[in-house]
Length: 191
Picture 1 (cartoon, rainbow, N blue to C red):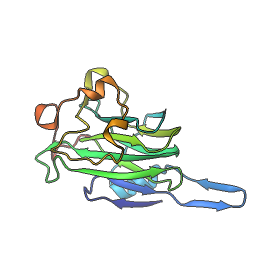
Picture 2 (picture 1 turned 30 degrees about the vertical axis):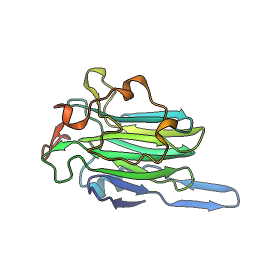
Picture 3 (picture 1 turned 180 degrees about the horizontal axis):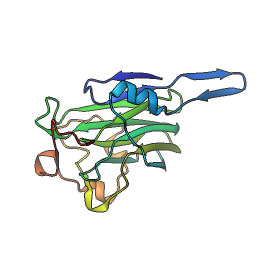
């Protein structure tokens, strides 16, 4: 597995090695030992999630506050998405900046979104199956979000605005400067 630091170094692209032949392919989608060696710390994933969505569905930008903050390792099993991680750590040199990476069944890339980041994705092909690991269980009382269209973040979601399909919750999330429910840069949220 190959690990690539993005423009925001804590957000990591994971590229698995694909072994293919005329019969199909085999790929290791997760290796705890390799990831821990690269990061210098261990992430204890405890739950796998999966969603299926049609073109234009936008989910996000979501995160959970401590003590149920989540690291996510996300990938696409079928179809294609634009996956986005936004730094919401107050005091970070990249606060409010984002990384956007295309994940697809074809490229088999994954994105590691650490604690302290809001996460979202927009679906670029019908019948896209999106899967991810998390290292903390879902907690409704810790669940938060940021507006997907916050101009201060400036995400180009690629899909035309009128073709986006959002939940009622995601249509009403606050802008980044309208919430105090954020993380602090330099705090170890893995302790």
